[in-house]
Every structure is written in C-alpha cells, then in structure tokens.
Amino acid sequence: MKYFIFLSLFLAINITLNPRLWAKVEPPNYDFSVDQFLPYMPGKNISDLIKKLKPKVISSDKSFITYQFYIEHIRYRFVLLVQTSQGVVTDFHARLPQYFLHDIYHQSLINRFGKQDIYKKTEESAIYIWKNKNNIAHTYSGTCTITCFPIFYSAAIVKHNYGASFKSILKKQLESEN
Image 1 (cartoon, one colour):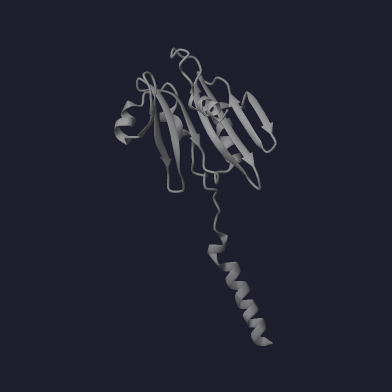
Image 2 (cartoon, one colour):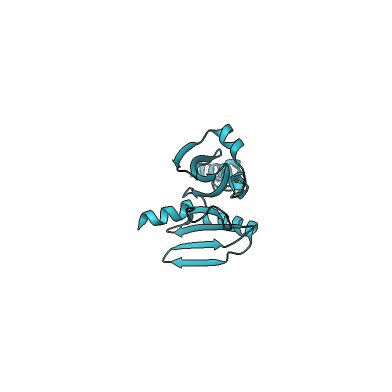
C-alpha cells in the first residue's frame, strides 16, 4: 500500500512539474501575415521577383502571362498564381492550406482592409468580398466541417486599361467549372 501511495505521489509531482506539458500550442498560420502577399498585389511591378525567383509559366497569350510562385515558411508552403501584363500584376489567386485557421486569417484581412462589403454564406461555406480597396478587389472564401479553414484568397485590379480581354484567374476558374 505504501508503495502504491509513493508511486502515485511521485507520478503526480512529475506530471505537474514537467515543463513540456505546459508548452504553448500555436496554430500553423500564427506566424503567417497578409504582408507576404504585398509584393504580388495588383499594380505592383514584379519583374525583379520574376528574375530572382524564376517562377514557372502556367499560361501565356499576347497580353497576359500567369506565373506559379510559392509562398513558403517553416510550417507551410502553398502555390500563388500571379497574372501579369508587361511585368505588372493584374491579379493573383492562392489556394490556402486547410490547416490554417479561418478565424485568424479572416481577422487579419479585416485588420488590413476593414469589414468586407459582401458576405454570402451557402451551407457551411462563405465568401467575403472587399469590392474596391485602393483599386483592388479582394475575395476570400472559407468553410467549416469540424473546424473552420480557408479555401482561397484572391485579389484583382478593379479599374484598368487592359480591355475586355482581361479576365482574372478567379473568373477563369469559375468559367471553367461551368
């Protein structure tokens, strides 16, 4: 009996005093910042980034080139599609990792751009649209199953002189689904 009490007391003390059990749990996108998209924002010249990072060309026509870049960090790596015209970004589209937390990502967009202009929820998925923030339309989508997570984030130039032939990556994707 003494042995059982001693063993129980020993285990209780070791468990409560073990600093590993007090470890802070950080979500995978805790250190992610919307600032990582700033070099790729519509209107930015990315000729230097193209020379430096040598992205893959996804598609090309007379007026527009779409590149595949990667946003990467210790905890994540995801594709960023960037469409350009004469070295200037017209729009981009990123399929975000599902292990990012929706609440944190959506709040970071609100902190950056203010409250969204349009919110539309269908079943467990939602879309958030900022119509015109400094001549850029931002579109974000998230969904919930057991937890909530982001699906994509996209930004496109609003007023431009690219003519009727300009279609954002997001619009092209939506048309290809129909």
